[in-house]
Length: 181
View 1 (cartoon, rainbow, N blue to C red):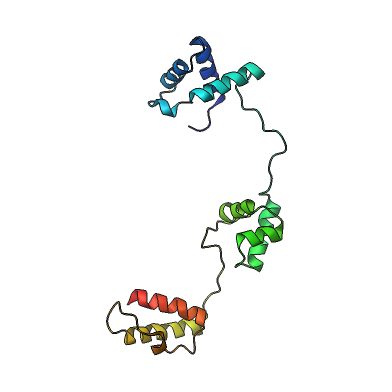
View 2: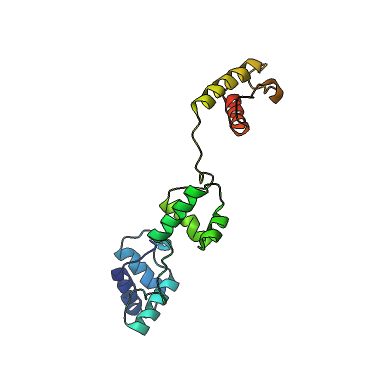
């Protein structure tokens, strides 16, 4: 359990005082009260001491709010800003995108992963193949299979005619063709 409720904190503090300032006994009582089988799943002795110190200082078992204003970097405006930037230039790195937008790199990365549901090595938008390119790829695959001496042997790149196919598409199609051979 990473977050303990106020009731659980209050019980641990009360058990600490009833056990004559013993954290070990307070932990064991905590485990038996909340049916925790392993002691390591209970709050640590240091955590109980922290709760007791906080209780003595503020008369409360609740967490203190953090000082300063809350962080609001992942706002709807920033998400929209990153999405527009992604549409304009999908191949830009996260670091360069963050510098161009004036946002921290970690925030841009979080927006890409958590809000836009993009992940490393998938953070790109690619264009769809045209009908002519698909037809050309079918002839390329056929030519690759015809020139293959036996399954698993890759022919020379020069033996495959590819004047009608763009080079970047050609590289992807050749890899795909030889995986299926």
